[in-house]
Image (cartoon, rainbow, N blue to C red; front, side, top):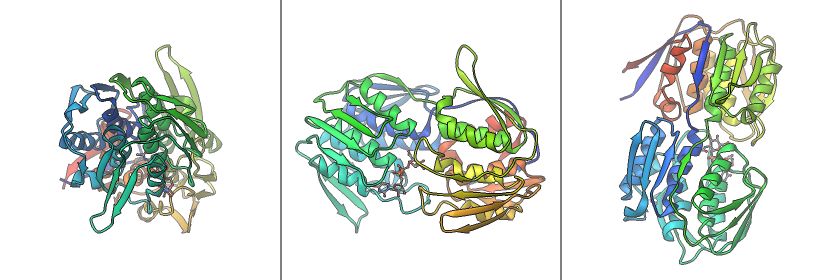
Length: 425
Ligand code: UD1
């Protein structure tokens, strides 16, 4: 059932929020668990629709998957009985592409429905395929069925230079290479925190991966991996979303269960705009405190691969800058079509012009409530931030997008003083 949010805006966010496990790490680590060949227990998983979808996909492949505690998933891949992943749940989820590397590594074959996910550009998988072929897999595209089939009697380590820096391709090829014979060297790889988290998980299962978090990853393939218990890192993008929301509502929010070094690009931009961002350690965990009392100053930003400003926070940041003094220039370098939220922000009184990959945001005093619709996950986050800071009431439709990636969103915001109600259609 499609639901919507009713948001009464203009309330200052104050208090403490705890960040959940990282969506982008979780959606790679769950398929990666197939490679263990034994039971794995994953901790600190977020309660989001994408995790539920992957659980269902693994179950359809025959695995035993169960939540043992709220945030703990036990995955037993030993009962997997098919390499046919061409059903609907697979095609409707972008991250299911990780089954390519995981199944190929574990069983030497897979047939996979091509992924969908957020509509934020073409999102090809040519680099994933190039990597699998370099490892010795035969990969066929069946365009009439929108299916990719990969098969290898034996994967062999190789040296692969990616043409573009891709999170998905880096992780996918790393998964397969863990089981390839000999050494694989991946060059021009993504360095995002969740790439490192997946590598740490694989190493915990007995893989040999060095260099994750740098431009070059070296992998020595292993015949066998084993089960383990692993806790997923906190979500960088959820953290950034609450940081930006705190500043947008001229609030004062302590954000717990964070890794401050993952947030440096965001902290820097918020401080440039006039917000106060303090890092702390309460003896148990790191936290960030974001305080903002005044109207922000405009800032310019360009989305970049990590450690640059993440594209996933470009949309939330734009909502914040809509009420800055002056004009902000935002350049989207990662995806060619990630300005779908602009039309909706304009309904709230924002003044934004877009030319190709550049958006110019002329700040207004305040936004006003409107009836608006999310077009993708982070566009949804952007509109919610705009609604929280706006005067009046906003209806945000298509919240199944934010359900994909934000755990307990309305509960967390409401605990900070927001007024967000989930309504049935
Ligand atoms: C991941 C994240 C997503 C984030 C994005 C960029 C997950 C589940 N999703 O998506 O939230 O916005 O990284 O940080 O982790 N490209 C190619 N060929 C390929 C693969 C990618 O040309 O084979 C291009 C894409 O079109 C895009 C760029 O590379 O322009 C980056 O994409 P990529 O890093 O692969 O993004 P995803 O892994 O899909």
